[in-house]
Image (cartoon, rainbow, N blue to C red):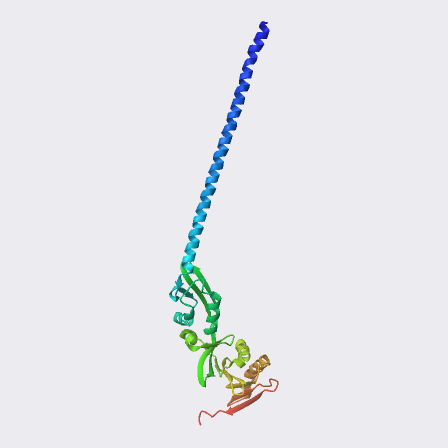
Length: 286
């Protein structure tokens, strides 16, 4: 009996330990649930705050955008870059039909097309800026390569042309660029644009520097170089490279063939059979 009593007394603490473990596990479960509940609440509050913040910011931006977009804008709020010969006042006069208008009514593509049509501009980009409200205009002007003259409304008009043969009124080219140009075109007209472009693009092939391109009333083309007063090309430039090569050959050979004479005209309408018109030079003593 004493032995059984001892065994029972030893086993009682085991039951007590199991109860403690169960109580502890229950407590841990409750604590975990509380922590999870707090974390969920914290996440919810953060997401709610973010939603409120972004919503209020979006509403503010929409209201600000609407206010700026419908507010009339004038030319004074236009920023222009890329100008050289063309002035800001030229842009202002040309675009006066577009101002004042609100930003949403202004069409950048329409302004671009109008500027290219009215001014000697090769390219232009127009963009709108809402904060602060502005119009940005970036201009690419045409670069002149030659002086030119043309008959316009029964008057002789002077201007310049670019590498594409497009006409540039003289007032749109600044003096520094004008002073660098040595080539000129007499009686420019759009019907000869293709031929003029071809000659200009090949002007550096001439051994005698090209000085002038002339177009007579019959639409025939002639050239003036540093050495030759008149080089006749004819109505077109289909054989231009061949004509230039022949002229370069003549330039090398003529000084040894002609003494006390000057070549007045070189007829290269048929470059395989060039014809020369020369004049005698007077002796210095006479």
